[in-house]
Length: 215
Image 1 (cartoon, rainbow, N blue to C red):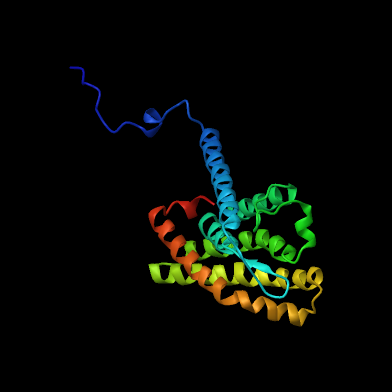
Image 2 (image 1 turned 90 degrees about the horizontal axis):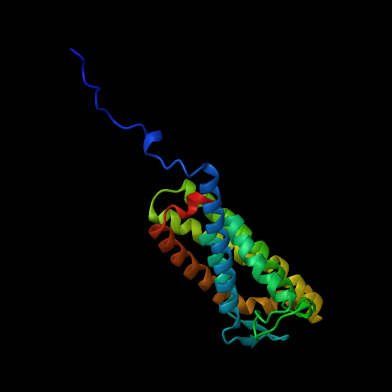
């Protein structure tokens, strides 16, 4: 007597969409990454042109640029975060008025803020690289938050100063000592921005845990 064919689990290959190849998934991920880079570059621009407060002997303005740079790196990681901030910087140097005070063009590289502007792109990459390393190795919300804060301080705050202070001295006609003392005015506010960026980034990664797994 013939037996009926057994019914078992359907192989995954039979249920997968044959029209979608690994290349399709890679292109989808790549498109998502490009969108994130563009959105966060625009975010940096918007935060930079909000009303600024010029302070110090050469009137370098207090803005929300640094908050945007720290947050971009912490949320997107090194590759995407660095690309987003670099795109923002290049667009500004090319002429669009996306820097503080609605400034733009290559002339900004001759101003006292030049070192900080160049430092933003480096800071976006390093902040993100440190942050994603922490996120992939740490367990527990407290450890992750502390790691994100460390990434913002080391990769963002300190790196921006390493390039910003010499640029301030060079283009502002100051000694390195005077430039460093002038930069101290910004430390309290920028450290507060590091804390704010870490808190926001931690919330983002809790809501979207796969974000750090992508890149």
